Length: 155
Length: 155
DNA sequence: CTTTCTTTGACTAATTCTGACTATAATTAT
DNA sequence: ATAATTATAGTCAGAATTAGTCAAAGAAAG
Figure (cartoon, rainbow over the protein chains, first blue to last red):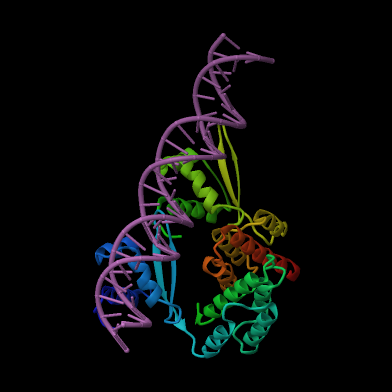
């Protein structure tokens, strides 16, 4: 886990920046040329070392004035249940299963009633109806995982 | 929403004017020459940052004494705006448009910050990524309309 | 030797910037 | 009145400027 390869070095560099600022905005090509690597290596570093599981949220924008923004977030304490739920979801989720998960989240005070209603509206059968049950369940799974991942931290 | 590109700077400038006056009338060529850009860039800024999804209504007049008028609308004052938004969504919605709408909903106190974050996670590009841009935008549109409908029946 | 992780680059996608061409309204000339 | 001229703004497509994806090659670990 030390600086034997360039990815580790870039990781360390970025984390030092973040240690100071809590949130940092970089130019992919600048960082790449600073370490003399191809730009896509920056994507590799971010994808493998700045995940939400590790407490980082990443946003980016392309085009003129583009950037990659990395933010350090505070992970909540009691998130084992989130991992459990995510693992159970896999790559498909029915509406019934989705409702059950939302119910669990409300019971554990991870979301409010109002928030539950909004999530329900999102994963509703009609909303996601696209004529392909398998794909529908996959999208519903994606949405639910995204929401569970978001609940890992407080913004 | 940063200031590395000139469009963001012009956006900020205009929004500061509007923050004071709620409604503002500009000369396209004046603004363009003030920021030393071609006039059509003003159209670009308006088209990408002052849409109805962003909560603005724009009118203009050509010819002598022409102008561009930008007005900020309040959802509380005219609840038909929800219908206008749903209409504007039609059968496709990009992530960018979705973010604009959610931001507008927060500014108008129709949803909380937390609720906004959950909806954002739902309509996120990664979340809905299924290898078909058209279908992705259609699903995103469905979700957003479901949310807006839910908000209407709540108030 | 096999598996996993890292590095690379060709191709793709999104956003911004620019300018030529078009459209409309007001003013001036006939 | 009508036509010509001037003064605005709109549209659209292409160039420029970023970042993302993916798969193959190379290196390291087990």
